Image 1 (cartoon, one colour):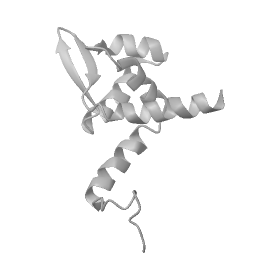
Image 2: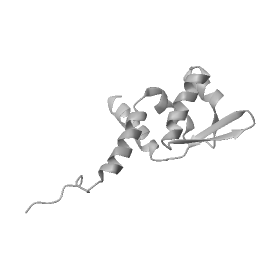
Image 3: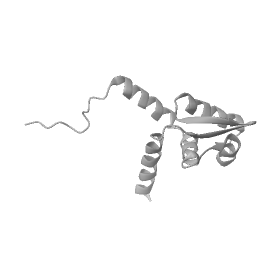
Image 4: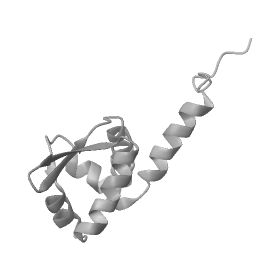
Length: 106
């Protein structure tokens, strides 16, 4: 008697396409670091994120815009500054997988 594999849950191609887009986007070290910076915060300014990444403001904004378009982060304008937070908590799962893998190598 053949048992059903735990991985054969019948995931739709459309859902897998969406997940693969998020994984591809987060496969960049600066974007993963942005998730880490935003984790547990109510909002972090673009200026602070750029400073912590040691990247120009424009490059940081480009990363954040790509992440916003896929619904990973959201921005909230307060005066001249935009504060970002995580809008899809599932992105933390990817970061936690990276952390676990890094811990396995320690």
